[in-house]
Image (cartoon, rainbow, N blue to C red; front, side, top):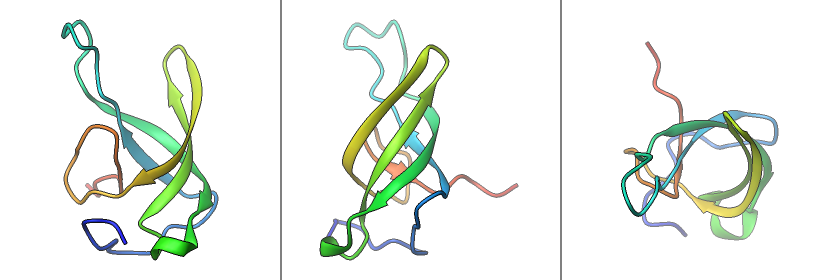
Length: 82
């Protein structure tokens, strides 16, 4: 299980935020990116998912991304509700 419990269960097709790492030199800061859940990894209580992450310059795919309640680089979270 991940370090934090997922507040609601993710499912394939849901939109979430993936929090980018940014660049080591600081040219690009960490920031949220839109992502679509492509798989839910049920062996760890759905705290990790596979994502199709959308960036301004293209897409990338990331497997076994851990959940975090607060924005944390390299993790996913639910988008805030306004």
